[in-house]
Image (cartoon, rainbow, N blue to C red; front, side):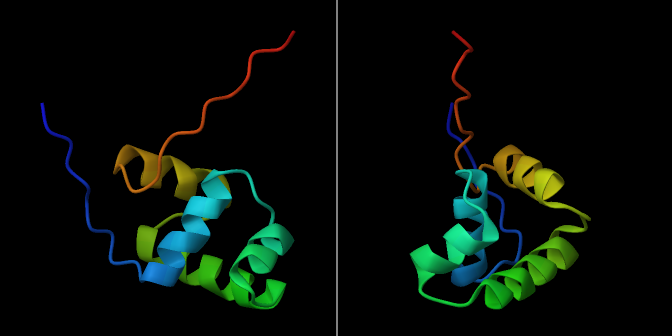
Length: 79
């Protein structure tokens, strides 16, 4: 069975921001990784939310995972 990636209309930079968000980075951490200001990350997230039709980070990541835009992150089990 072949997996299909859905085009959500995101730019490459927005996709990068969303992938780092899904990996667990904060806005500040995303900014450091991408070499931009945290406010720039906030603006990217605003545009991502609008394009995806969601209101928060959790639902943006869930939708991106459902559309196979980002890889679902494994949550370590508590010891």
